[in-house]
Length: 130
Ligand code: TYD
Image (tube, rainbow, N blue to C red; front, side):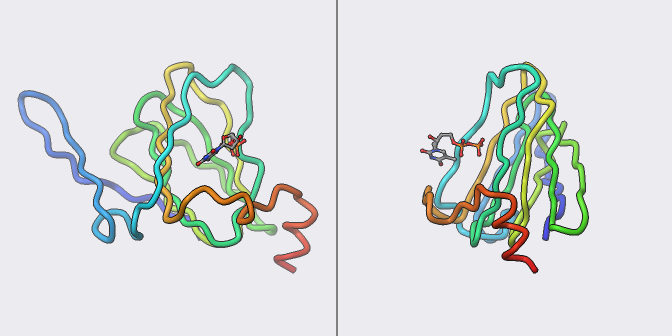
């Protein structure tokens, strides 16, 4: 399952501010955050599924595309605005592509990094969902 979340912007004459809070505008407890930046041109990242992890992806700067593949349908989501987050949970294959050179993609996750939670083989992913 995936869905876009629109964050409230606190804006005034000085500019804009967004606050992210566990179980408020982020639908889980944030245990880890990381960001992807200075991505080389024409690179795809991700190419894996997670068994249990929940994530929210936010393009803090620039833009990129996220492909969500549930084994039946592929959805392509453009992230191009720091006030929008893409919530992803469940067994879906994800790819990230077409990063602009100024893209900073923030990822919030509900668990620590754990290689055991990754499915990096597409055929194994397909077998698990069938
Ligand atoms: P990788 O899984 O290839 O990133 P992506 O799925 O975004 O393309 O991760 C790159 C490296 O970073 C790899 O050596 C694992 C490490 N890493 C961590 O140590 N902690 C983390 O939270 C993440 C996401 C990756």
